[in-house]
Length: 507
Image (cartoon, rainbow, N blue to C red; front, side, top):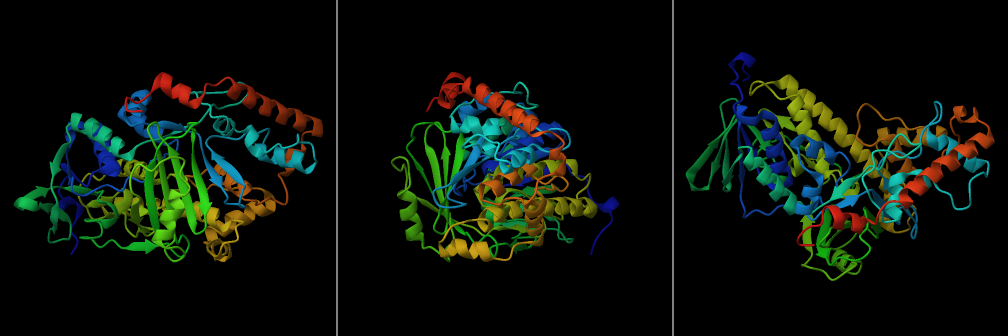
């Protein structure tokens, strides 16, 4: 039986279930926004480890550091962090080939046509320098390949600078955010949850901990990982399984010794039945092999991972199991799920931390004045579903648009894809256009790089690109290319910049 909004109690106490990056990010953010107006408690157990696979981010991480008032250099110093300008995809189009998904724009528009249409026009006319490619016009891509970095707000002649994100040690980030949250009044309780208590309407009323302790709350944020202790264990919100599109369901993770040079980008190398990540930190390299158990055994995956490290392994490989997909309800009654409790998107495009951020931002925007507000919950769920599905499509694109010969990859190439992805690919193939719907995460430039990098070519370019003469287009492209190249040549080495500004004590 439902009750009216006027009967629903006001929210005075938030209880966060679980720590890790998601839990402490939620705690720090809520404490910063609500201050002393709400009581915030986080419950976690040191006996339960954190997954910690999300050691790479995307530029939206700056929204978090700005909100919390975090100094970037201090942050990176404390978390052994490095800078990230791009993701390199090795062997996804064809074995031996690689391309970058670099942050920030490529070139700049001219008139009403986007940059790539002029580049395609010059390419079709044979008016590009030998060996020229799209990424010569991306400041982040050129800097990444040169292992250079500095903070640039803008580049002369271009309306942008150098977009960047971070690589970091997830365990250290959790510790950093915990300190930040506790200084703002968040109370941490150590304990294992024995039971989730509900009232007569099905709303969560309290957590029963070991030692017969009871933690009451008005609103609960479930950051308990894959288990989803509250959102699934108590509320049975349901889960939509996407393994028919994204069949990788296992990972082996292992750190190894550092290697030079210190690259300012993540690497994702295609393997026989999945892919391997490489994330350079100041004190080590994070590695992992994501694979499908239907196509490769755990032993085979481990051997392949260890055979492709840049240095001596620093621990035994740690196995992870997951099911790619999302909760059917991200917000159910008086509980919102964040992080792995809300769903899992493999870390191919480093979206894990962002999904926690966007979930928190969405929650704060729609935060209910009272415990019961189904309209706000419905809108929150609608927005989350849209975001997850668009990210899903982007990940499927990498697999579907491959040029490899292994059975796993042939199966990915021949599978039926979501209609939303098929339409986006066809629009690009026919007209070179990319439509970004509403506020979906990945921009037109992101889609452009993956589709181009993996061999999809448009049959035509925009007719507005013909309003300039061949000579004007050639001069325009050379100007952009030269500005990017000259600016990057003046930047310091990535490792040198870190040593000067944010070197970790342990590094």
